[in-house]
Length: 306
Image (cartoon, rainbow, N blue to C red; front, top):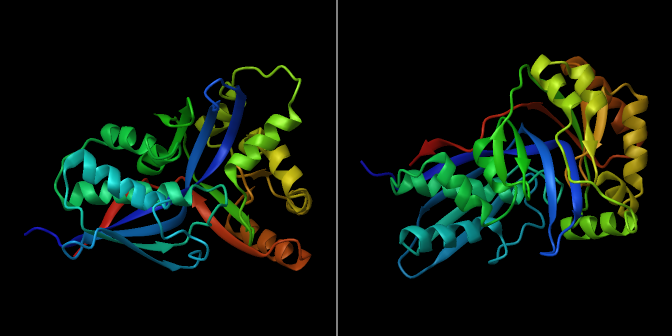
């Protein structure tokens, strides 16, 4: 029996490495990044809507505040692209239940777009391969393909060319969340300003980071975390430096601004260490809210049909 609708669960991400090349003539930067999907999830429900209603969206959940409900929402963009590409019904109802921070450097909007692509493939029995889904996703945003694949992966180009990475073990994270997001374009512009006049090399994957992942060595991974946008994010939001200092002072194995920020991700040894760091950061007064997560997590997958 054909489903009326499906629910897809999609993960947030942390960039273990984000190396940014010089600004290209096309206005974009070549990047090399190592993603890890983590256990903060959005649930994306898609079903056929009322005839003539078009694509509608409703949003709930812990981090729903500030999420756009117009055509700029990446979930709506994904739906419209899929409708055009596969001649689907133009009347769709999307419901987002959000847990991934908004404009937090954790690809929450991209995750929602990935959820729509995977959900519509299932709902209409399209039989699209994962590689095809990732190619469609790259038209919407550079983080969408990784949200589809999940796990640990290397991203090149604009971050949308995904290659699974050899990695073992699981990793425990404490996430210092901000009540205000940061604009990704603004962070890249600030990065360009800070690097003006400098010779910037083409980005390469960190061999020490990849060795740590292959060995499942959390201590070595903590020392290898790298983000070329971190200085720019801290320049625009100076309080982030204080958050990083406090987390490192309280024994985190490593701390990094995730993506373009402002979420700060701290790698810790285990769940007990995570609890201790959460208490320390809470009592310090420098963090508005905190979350704990485990990585790597699965990519977008169907969890319910209705």
